[in-house]
Length: 85
Image: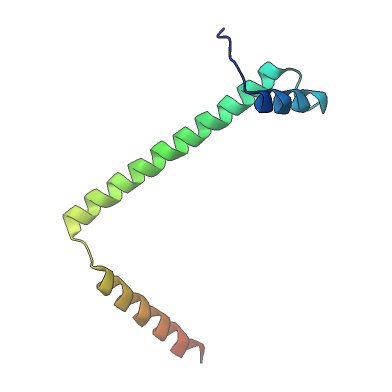
C-alpha cells in the first residue's frame, strides 16, 4: 500500500471527517476521495467521447455558422411567443 503525504490542511480535514464519525479512518477518507476522483475522471472521459462524436457528426453533416444558429433560435423564440399569445 502506498504511503501518501497530505498537506496540513488536507490532514486536518481528513481527521475532522474521522472525528465526526462519518469515516472510520483517514484511509477510508482517502479511498472515498479517490472514488470521487475516479467518478469525475469517468464523467470527463464520457464528455470528451461525446464531444468527439458531436464533432464527427458535424464534420459529416456540415457545420452551421453562429449567425445561422442565432437566426434559428430567434425564429423558435418568436414562434413560441406567438403561440403563447
